[in-house]
Amino acid sequence: MVQLEILCCGELTIDEISEAGSISGEGSLKLSSTGRFFGGRGGNASVYASMFGVSVGIMGAVGEEIGGQEYVKHLISEMVDVENLYYNKKAHTNKCFIFNGQEGSKIFFYGGALLEEREPYLEHLSSRIAKIEHRMLYSTSPDPEVNYILLKNSEAGIKCFGPSSNIYSYLKKEAEACLGNSDILFLNEDEGEFLERLLQKKMQEIIKEFNLKFIVKTLGNRGGEIIAEDSVLKIPPYEASGVIDTSGAGDAFAGAFMANYYKTEDLPYSGNIASATASFVVEQAGCQSRMPTREEIFERMKKRII
Image (cartoon, rainbow, N blue to C red):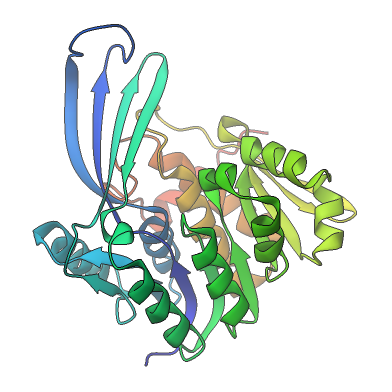
């Protein structure tokens, strides 16, 4: 197997993203645009980490239909190692239906490749994770048991946990089990507030209890924070040319942050480049539809909003 610097573990998803004037009310809703894109937290994070020149692999479930095959080819073109994917012959690749309107967004997720053959998939993960040579792990599966298996059995020097919106379905013992095997936690503001309520602890207390290095918290158009036990580093936002679709921005942030933290161990630099990278994602539909170049990201970093 290839020696990897970062192994991203999470879903690959075909995103169907549509724009509508309104997503509420009765009757049929008229869409102004619709499109099909590659997405999913694992897939998004892996391609954005890879663009910064580190060796990245993806571990997740994918269907063998045309959409799944196209996604795998796309990952290969983005220099992401696909050797450890699990191919589900019984189901389609996961799908996410996103409807953006003036009131916000409605999201519907179909976990095709994750719903069928769950036990064989868990066995695949368990048997492979300790054998894959990787130095940093990013576990962001929608399934708490999958995250626990990966975090517990990985031999990576740095283990990152990104539960995303699925944290809302975690039991306290599931969150504690995953955190107990993690070094870095990624979440957004709302997810952080939920975790504090679930564990009845503040961020710094969570860091101390579970011996985390730090917590990376995104704050939408307000940038982000890197929270340590005794300090909080503010990460500034970067101005996008316009906001079309915010889905996947947090994944891009995580991918960019991990790659640059792995290379430099410089928290302010890694946070700033992650924030600048995420600002490009919101400018169009589809997290991976038009990825910026590193030169574009560095140019935007020169125009930081304080």
